[in-house]
Image 1 (tube, rainbow, N blue to C red):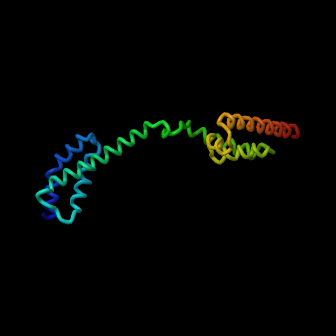
Image 2: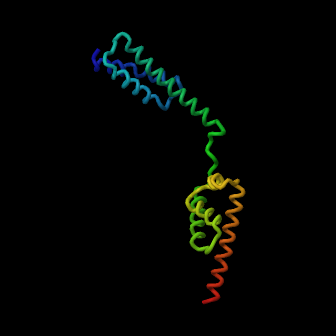
Image 3: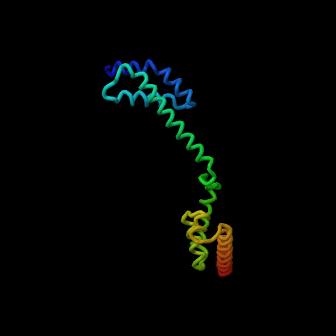
Length: 168
């Protein structure tokens, strides 16, 4: 069988092969699966004319099985609670936190070393969970520490600003 004859047989079986893919429930992947089967069968060096149609159907059937199995595995994984992504708030909050922490580091004057470390982590883009993991604290402890650092930095900045206003 020549390549042209094989291609003509593939095109002639296209509707039947497409129906097989649809029966597997892969409606949106019909063209991809059938085309992959055509390419796979056409790359074989010697095509056997008597078993060509069965070979084509077998290739389509196996590709459908692989896709269906991978989709089923993906669905199982999506339902696994430990693999769900952690809820992330609005990404704008992280940007505001970073900018605020950078501003506090530049303008708040002298801070204690743990305060500087905490603000530096936030300004570098670390999330509260990551800071808690690195520091060995819980997330509520990290939140309290950040509020405390911000409050102390705000108080120092307000005192410096008040003094600067009174001096002028």
